[in-house]
Length: 74
Image (cartoon, rainbow, N blue to C red; front, side):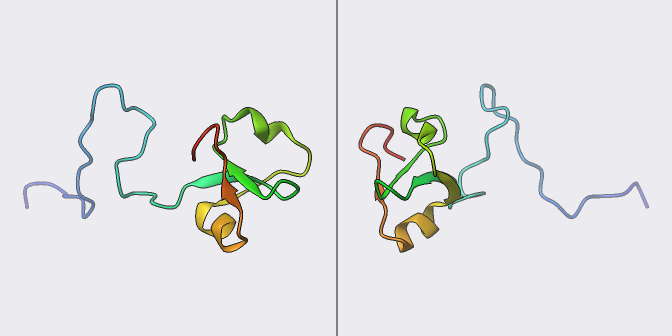
């Protein structure tokens, strides 16, 4: 036996991509939904500061018939 091997495939390191997930790892990212306006936003959008906003998966926001924000385009 020449050493332990991992059953997980190696994830290549891409310069400038630290802290970001490779494509396909999380195909349903969280968004911030505003129930009053029936819109969902990226977490860095200026409209996420509204009272009553909640974080949820994009699929959940779509199931609730929320529309994507026209400013941040989540």
